[in-house]
Image (cartoon, rainbow, N blue to C red):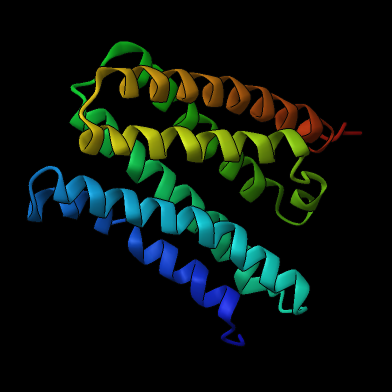
Length: 188
């Protein structure tokens, strides 16, 4: 394995994920909220940046292909847990977070099961939009503790609901595309 800047950014994103909830144990609002928002926003930026650099500089690697989605999922799931816990588990926010976590685990398991055939499950344009909406929604919800306005939670929750719908659509799309690889072989 060659250590590259894109791989370093992905590993940094993975290591930053547990720091997000830790911020709320170390500091009170609004400091913890600012730290959490900066960590998540930084992770979101490096998510785009590491892929861009890997492609532009021809530094793609098997390690990078493995660690990048793990880092993404870890940061998103940890952020969702923090948001749901900090907001007292409101129904729509909790259901949106549950749908997102469910899809992420489902698609990761599907890719693992498919092994070599997982390359058939290419990331779609809609999945990229889903990621963008998800990152914006989570950032808005993390900013809620800084801005202290009820409208922020409403906007963030609505955006997370849109992300959850896109999440379920893209999850179903991956499942449909994987169906030919999931069928049992006919026995003679």
